[in-house]
Image (cartoon, rainbow, N blue to C red; front, side, top):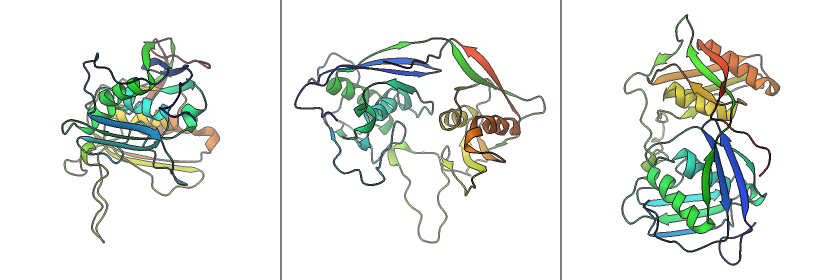
Length: 291
């Protein structure tokens, strides 16, 4: 469980793969920041081993903005892999949240088990997406001496098209959900007796049984919804070929399943929405079992 300061970190190779390609990442000894990169940097930043994550660590992982606000980034109890996912996938463009996720193979145990706290301050009121993407990339590269390149190989993906009978999804009504504001997340809790805010693009999990899966989301595109479903339930990535960019409300409920049949049940759920899931070869996906 190495710290950032005080000694060398043995070089390692992490192979991260998805239908978007693979990130090959080398972690080396710590070094001070340089100014040879045009990407924005933090004015002040700290990465240190977390000392108190509690029984249920507050680990926002690669996607959630955590306890952050414009100009300040705070991430608690996140693994190195989670920080890499967040910086290079979830917020890679520095503007919006990408719900796809890379599969990580290889790397030492500490890259998954050790938890780190990140506290950083920008010179101005930078948006959380920018700090979580390009600025966090720069910080990780400076502190861990990260070096990255992408590689691709063929692999299977699910391609989604609309069934001939037509899509069984309702477009989101204007005003029925509140757009997600990454700069002010999580939303302010409602006053006592008031309902919770329905946030566009946020998953909800109604009460389920062992053989009934329920997931709900409002105000999401087909691409974003199935990027999450792919991460949670499927073995293969999902590529949206419907051509639809409309926001929909997703009621995801079906019965007669068990944990051993999630993939098949998920395919059935996709069909229930009158979408056709077809397995295709993609030249963009690479899997590896070792570093």
